[in-house]
Image 1 (cartoon, rainbow, N blue to C red):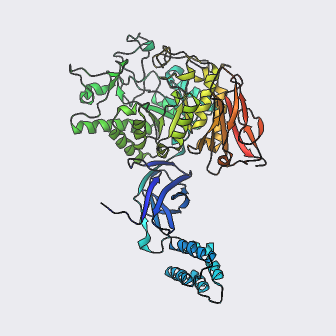
Image 2 (image 1 turned 135 degrees about the vertical axis):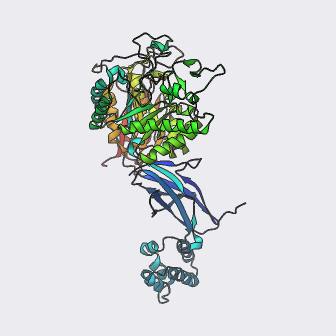
Image 3 (image 1 turned 30 degrees about the vertical axis):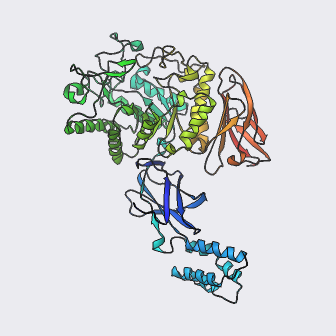
Length: 638
């Protein structure tokens, strides 16, 4: 058994359970904390050392105690890519001396010996700037307290920072940290099918509407050739007509596979024009990375060893009972021979390299939980070693620990269970889990209101008020949110009472929508995204607090930045059919607001201003008027 040292450094955060890198964002404050524990009454000192992986020199930041042996500091990584963090701790003999002698002076005790001990500590520094302090401690003309007060000075303390002896120093292991660009942590995503917009040329025109709604990312489902074998018809029927487009996730035909464009969408020149237009509008394009094949994919004939064989020799198609996907072959990522595995993994990596070369740096990854974690650990690290700006969103509607493990091995963001959280108590629990729990060190939640596969909760057959309510929740609860097109038109007809998918799903047919319709919720979505841009608190994952309401149909939470100069209170009526009112219970001290004086609440949606006092403001929310309040809370005169 290895004995403990005198100082234990525990629970360093941010970190991951497996030792994979935690996550941060370039040029944004990162709170780093740890436990520093020792025996006896000696005081400790600590600092964080950190650096980019390609740097030799370490930056340093002092740790400060925040209670219960917990210490913390804040840093701002200036570069993307891999970093290291390490904690150093030591017995702070100078601080211990100051604390001990002051207690004795306050008790009226003689401290002649202690004053000499202090002088010797100062002399150990061998610092000419401390010579006057040494003289003061040994000046017997002065009273003992005055001699002490001459050295109890910030200038002296500043020169005594750090371990007084090398034997006092303890250093933690190095903790890995990956620093992303901002879009990996903050963004508003909008998904639409380019084939429903007339291909890439029509989609390029559609980009202007998306930008006008304030979205940051446009996400396209697969844009590759679609197989003919077992092509699905409307409603996922087994027989497709000659003009049915099929599912874009049935990737591959005689035209090519994952590195090719479907000819019906346009040319690579059209694609380049679309990427350029998106950039000019402040948008980024995200593509679907779906590692599966149609029966017509070139890989099926060229590399049969890359697929699962059934006992009758046929290739197994994808199934998620009761769903069957006869038009899709899953890939076998563990073929029998090592050289086949290496060839397959390299081919999958090269798909990403191809599209990165065409200007795409964001990818939504289809069903990553059905592929090996070892593959993701390898491919994400390999691609990022050359392209640290790449962002990967995991479409991982799976078990919580699998979802978290995918985040550990490198995914930038993850879909979540938000779509199935509808009651105030479960929304509150989930918000606290994803923003303040341990996974917040490495898993960035993305709240999507809907997807082409999921029409859930109050959206099913729900009124427009339900769509406004769910959009407001998704856009304000976490820094990354998304919608699938058709949401702004309140498309709400499910495939069946038990099926969460849409009736007449766009996965299997084209949709034509009247984008300029006055019934569209596009202006409301634009308002939400504008509010997000104005408030730093809504772009930060941490800093969320759930507040109690005496009406269970009201859900209230706040978000604040670290300095608490941006405090946002969100109150939502979870019932899209009825008016609800009630009293809130706010923690004013936590929000940095006066306990006994007035404060102002300004609604970002309506522009109305309210003067409140005390922790129990009353609210009344009518879904016919709006889903709730997004309130900026300020002290009067601030």
